[in-house]
Length: 379
Image (tube, rainbow, N blue to C red):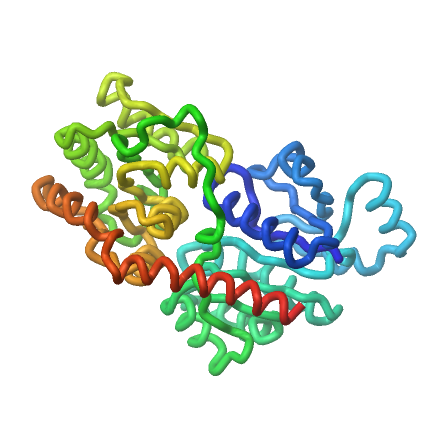
């Protein structure tokens, strides 16, 4: 059985953490399964090969999807490509785990839903399994998208909406969907490893930016004028507590540019971490005093480990996440004053130890395990 992990990449540490979370489950539940990954600009050949993955060959690009050709190739040719060159096609793949995180909805333009629609329909036609692992979905208001999803979503093997809003967005498209369930983000099951170089973590507060806060994808336009100011206020508050603010780049060049901009304001005196290993990133978060974070999986890593966390939001997935972990009051608004931000920070430090938050952490880990039991059953 060849399992393709779709949406995997090695730049966004959250996406890479999802990849490792899936691999851990594969080794335990399907130890004989083989891995396939699709090349993209954030998933290099060396990264893919290091995981022992077959390289998925696609007969398509952008809006052009000719992957039906894969099923026309003679089986001896496909075996030769696989055994000689480590190349597989869609026809060789038995199961797709779609771990795109947040790729399908109105905030994303392009061909993502068109291609998703075609891939699910072909999987159904050829008796393959297509499983959308827990992710943020929707909203879907473009009629062309709705029409396509109404055709394909009912034929997916399993659709896992990550929170209540995403579940509603799917149910608004396909009424009473029998293949759709709500399960939480599953990276909460991954145990982080703190690298040796990260010492005295309990005296450090991580500042984790997100370039999407300043992009057109953020429907709250007030953040464009306030985001950097809020992060500077946060750094000043951390310093006033005799704590050490540390910048952590959770994804690539765009986030790193914000880190560098902030560090320039402080004449390069702040520590900047660019850790390539997502499991170590989670370990760094777990070892810290607190975090102020704009990256979804950075927030999950803190909330699931009981690390105090103030967050910002550019998508409904943040509001739902903080609600689930009983910390709704820890989301920052763009117009917040420094004084109110300081009060929020002080309050956030006490929340993880409360019974409600402790019970939430356990509940969502149990739910993540239940999701994998469900996936194992349908396979």
